[in-house]
Image (cartoon, rainbow, N blue to C red):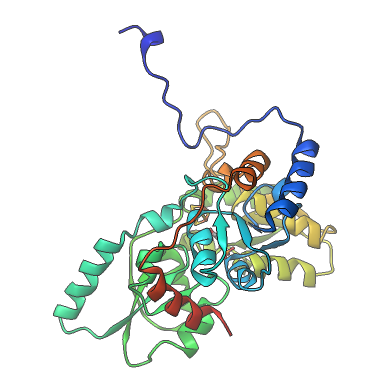
Amino acid sequence: MAIQDLPVVTSPFTPQVSDEDPLDLIEEIEALKKREDATILAHFYVGGEIQDIADFTGDSLKLARDATKVTTKTIVFAGVHFMAESAKIMNPEKRVLLPDLHAGCSLAESCPADRLKSYQETLRAQGREFETVAYINTTAAVKSLCDWIVTSGNAREIIETKVDKNKEILFVPDQHLGRYITEVTGRPMILWPGSCMVHEVFSLQDLNRAKKNNPGALVMAHPECPPNLLSVADVVGGTEKMRQYVFARKEPTKFLVATEANMIHPLQKIAPWHEYIPVPGIMTDTGETCACNKCPHMALNTLAKVRDCLRDGKPEISWQPYFEQARFVLDRSLLK
Ligand code: 13P
Ligand code: SF4
């Protein structure tokens, strides 16, 4: 078969290009929002042009809480699947749309519900008494098997104040966040071996090179980064903590930011007096850096797809029977 006869396979991560004028798209989105009685929520990791038209932006914790304050009939969640699923779970009566159903998450994928269930059964058969704590970056099926749900913003508080002190902790699926929380709380954990494909690939060597090239710069890193990176960070925190930190610091500072590159947008917006340098992904032999500090799942969100999902009323998150139990766990963990 000649090469031109091979079927064209498009990856779900093919760069999203559109020749539509962004200003026209924004106008269309505004009109459709009114027509469909919709509210747009956007995570800090989607493109700045989407964050700018959203009604609510935030980290995973704030957006999960914001979703419960929405008064319109429809929520458009510009983020990834587990986030839209959580919004639906907390608002069963609302229509929740996700601009692209392929927007998954490497952490959520690393912990399938059937594997977690059988691991929990193995631990129980060994007579171990434990509570399962899940990072919010999990499927609803996994959430329904857990005792607590945490985000990067409240993991410490939940471990310190809610989890039974007389039991072991099984923490899923982010081993790096789990290890970091163990360090700050002193609670040992059984760690699921998952990690985020974006934070996992920052290299210490490249970060050290960036530090050398930017003397005096402070390193800010997300707790999803591996421990060798966290060990050289001046500030460790989730995306909302990063935002609060730069706002509180009035002295103009250079920050090396070790998280998804779109995070620079809200940092620049809230504290424009600092300079932000995204920590690059791995450097290749030819001296170029990969674009791996961009989450390919978050990047599936585009203005055109926000417009399309509002116009067509799909893709929509549909209610599943296990959402009921996931709701109980999410409510007791995230709502104050
Ligand atoms: P936070 O915004 O809660 O820090 O989460 C980061 C993340 O990886 C979301 O997918
Ligand atoms: Fe998942 Fe990482 Fe993308 Fe967040 S940045 S959605 S944790 S793959």
